[in-house]
Image 1: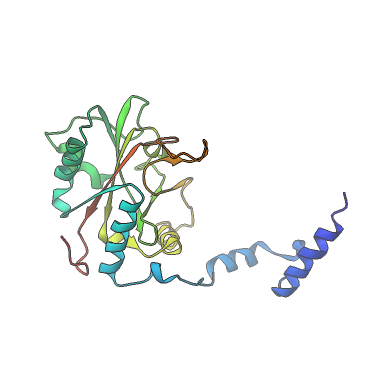
Image 2: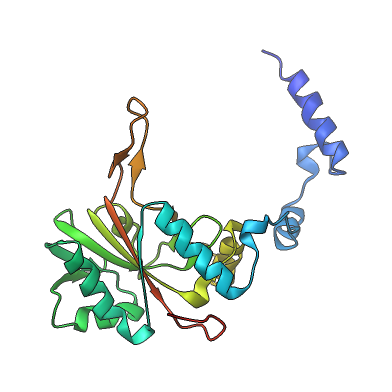
Length: 232
């Protein structure tokens, strides 16, 4: 089948966007310049607001998606993790990300941590730290790396994610900006997980099934570390 009609359509689009009509004329430098000078897109009202409004919207949307949210002071993180696991009557092997911000969880004498870092299939509880929380949808942005293995997001039955109020942003575009800022050398992480509520699917007879591709329970520990937010 000839590709001439497709080429004609694509050439018309490139001309309308004032870009080279021949793909071979597009240099690597031009692509890099475009990525660095990306234009801001329209920001919906739900992704705008004061710091306090964004935090409250994140909590409301996360809970609507089926997550349980506990808000606490930064020095109460370990106690909050223990409390949510106890309240949920969850028991079993616990794996905690090797993120230094989670060291106090391992130090708690009320919780036995089986391993730090990559979990095994026998670890039924995983504890990780989000790079950002998106107020627009109540989503947690998890970037993979040595301190945050991707398997922590999918292997366990119960997932506990810590996020700080200072890391709550408006929408997805703000989350990507936060991710880029964390990678000054331009090397983005291999994997980025966007987690909104427990794992679920409606593919089977349009009936929601929880835990289809990952954790059945999602607990969010929100740490109040932002002076611009009212706190608990």
